[in-house]
Length: 235
Image 1 (cartoon, rainbow, N blue to C red):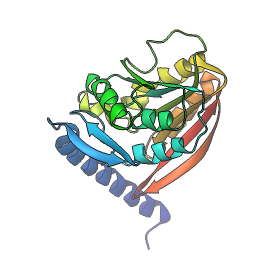
Image 2 (image 1 turned 30 degrees about the vertical axis):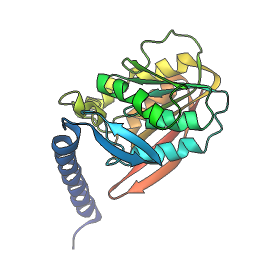
Image 3 (image 1 turned 45 degrees about the horizontal axis):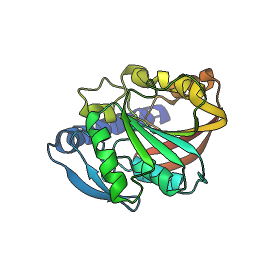
């Protein structure tokens, strides 16, 4: 009779194999595409430029945008970190935000955000800026809310396209975000950040609390063999 440990090890192995297979096909067929694709997600019309994270195929963006749509953002200044197509920035603008800044290290993402904002009637509320995380902003309280749908897996990214999926060993590439966010949020401001049950959540939680935030998990979204995990981090 097999032990519970051996059953769990087999299940863990199957999850790893499945995750690698999904990444293989997503990387070669979706992330490295050379043309602009059109899609709909969270009720929004979006152009997805080459190398940009595709919210029609990867469901975390749709779930996160739905959550943002339920927030009261009237009069607030919002930053969307790792904006991709700008889906979260658009959701924030439609939710009443006074102004939204969308940042991304990928120039193709920064090019796509204004087009998508205009297509969804919020072009005047959103500004797109190419930068790594929040590094281009002054270290003073500027923002009310920061949202970040970050890469959820901890291998070394192969290239720019893969940076939407992998954030380096032990999530190295996103370590600075949490201290940057704490410095730039107004007192009482909030960082909402989404990861996966396959992320190294012990590392993430240590970074969040180490930066000074009070945090809690406010949503879990089960899909297939994993769940998306949404943190609320209060300054």
